[in-house]
Amino acid sequence: MKYIYFGTPDFAADVLQELINADMPPVAVVTNPDRPSGRKKIITPPAVKKLVGQSIPVLQPEELDQSFAQQLESFDADVFVLAAYGKILPKWVVEMPQKGMVGVHPSLLPKYRGATPIQSVIMAGEKETGTSLFVIDEEVDHGPILNQEKLLIEDTDTYTSLSEKLAKLSGQLLIKTLPEYIKEEIAPHVQDHDQATLTNKFQTEDAEVDLEKDDPITIWRKVRALNPEPGAYAFKDGKRMKILEAELKDDQLILKKIQFAGEKPKEIDEKI
Image (tube, rainbow, N blue to C red; front, side, top):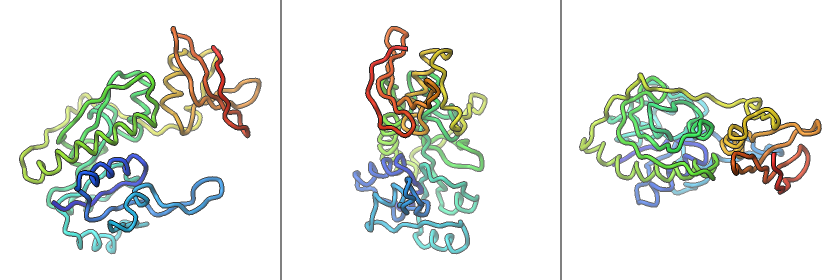
């Protein structure tokens, strides 16, 4: 089985790590070009490129053009796998391999389609989530399902911890499912589109909380969901305060770690 892996951020790298650990590396990876990062704008490779180093061919197209198409075709892959690549793919890419493209989406589709499934399940107070493998079609997270796996959400889970768990789960599910799909031992089934929900990207203003007016549970969920970026924040004594950690005890919010603009993070124990 030969596959090309499309992915860019930490989540995609964590998924790929599971496949590599299981001796199922891709024949190539496609990831975004190196970009300026941090305050000093240092040119930095994406997480997937850092992971594979020189061991696997890396394609970083600025444009998905004819030259890129020829590169893809040269690997003669059976299937493509996509996990958080970061670009909208044209139809010709999705349909190039015989088995099309398998998408990894960290939610129980058709629920929480779109850009922010992990943050959104935390903010909604869900008790469980999961990961879905599906055959990509022309609509967002819309294609038929190959396999799914559920995961309980802990009260202590943040975006970071839940993302890491779901990436590991997704990689393990790919290890099991990809060979079965290639051998046609499983068949994809259509999603129940009537049950679909859609998530959107969060803007900076979505991260603001009002410590006096907002419900403690809502604030607590937002702190966990938007950790580390963009990070929930409030204004205290006229100063912007980022809430890095918080707890909920007996329906009361307790701030555990904060950071005022221009200052270092500070651990506290303040009931709101």
